[in-house]
Image 1: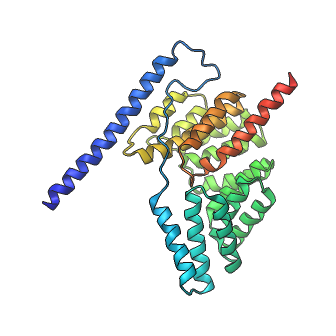
Image 2 (image 1 turned 90 degrees about the vertical axis):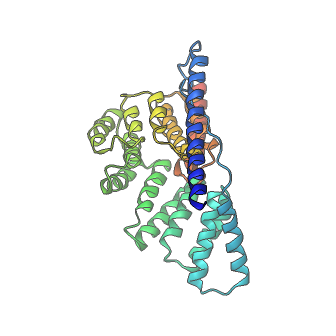
Image 3 (image 1 turned 180 degrees about the vertical axis):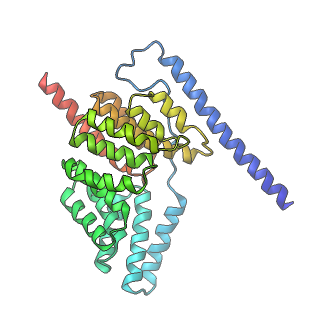
Length: 313
């Protein structure tokens, strides 16, 4: 009876995944048909997929309740309290409650100044708030405490990039990429930073050389091909649909894809298109992904660029 129940559950989950994929494929076809008579010079791809926003994690909400209750009712050492505050901060962060998360990260560091992960997480929130000097200090502290903590290396590079110091960020993204040349997202950030610090032609030469290390079965490799002009946006969407087994996995991929499509559109001066892509990335509600975290910064940059363009005319 138990085996039969498990088999039925597996069949049900598989049916749900197939239904999800069938729905998005139908949506692609419908949107393609609807947009065939429209001018799409600065509009979104005809293969657009709309994400079903992620529901706020029940697990994260329960974690907040658990840590809050424990912190007020039980006795802990300073190290233990620092860890619990950090974990509650992560839960707040995953729910999009960044002010509460920042408070917990900061308090965690007061209790344990050698907490590398807390410095890194606080630095990300400083970057989101355009508090670049504080972000640099936080990432420097994280790497000084634990030089092997690679996330701080990438996040420091991103903070330098948004702070207008792309040339200083290249060394960090280069080191981060060298640690895993098969990771498309490491390559994309190195390309973005490198292009900002040099020029498009030199960056594309670098990207083309590094592209060979990426695995074809990784859907995100299509983003590198898109930046090289080998494939279009519809091909990226088709690639991210491969092997999708749940709505959550689809949302995660859409959050990433729309962010990087938006970045390239903004670079090309297609501001309306870029703005819509960043909005789509935000609409997934995947708060813990850096693409979601920085999409709002990108939106502000695009709006400033468009305003500058209008004023120059």
